[in-house]
Image (cartoon, rainbow, N blue to C red; front, side, top):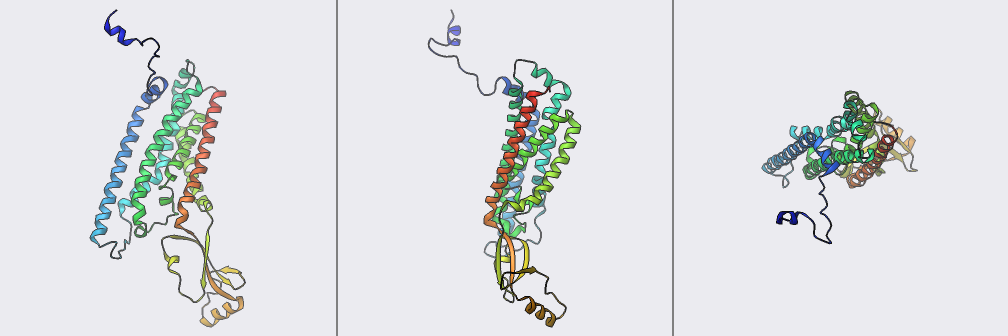
Length: 327
């Protein structure tokens, strides 16, 4: 027996070397979607490079203006910042439409799903491999971009004039971009599996994703409890009320017994009429309801937890449905 043959066989008492991670079904899924993987990786690298470059350009511009030793004002956010913020805001929808919706629907439409599920590989295992590839790709790319955008926005948030509770900031920093993307992509996968045709699935996913983002914009304020600040009616407004650290949600005037009235209650045409209205209602305070910037991480993680829970529920539904009905 030759030396080559001996070295290829395991010695007595030793087990054969286990295959690496990229083998079998994992290798098949990666090979099937290699073009999509490379496109997402390339776009992530380009997006990361753009954020790093534009942040450096902004830092140089502000340094030339004497910031932070001097007070400076950016009347309008740089266009590059607005473009990148808008692109990140649209990213979850794009991923859901172009990656989530076709993932299973394409295999159903072309008969690949039927071919694969009639082989020795269990249907759930095949689906799990495809879901693992898709969700991992989305998770890594969105985490990278979100971390870099947070690194850009946070030091300059007072200058960029972007409310931290707005979608362009809240939904693109911290864990939110990844959580929202995972939920929409997983929903797109489910929609595609149910519709079984790529183009209708992409269209349905697009409208569903837009509806979710609109609804999420209304729900965002419910992720935390607002605070209240009061100050005497004729006193100067506290500096924090005009700070970018707070997002004002409502404003009233209040009486000594705690009764609240709309802010415009005693806005009369003459000073005499205004003073009479104030005395009549016993108004003594200005009252503002607001969310404070320190609440942002807690609200983001609460929202991310809800979205990830919904993502897991949709994934369970996809596996359950596929195991009981032919693909």
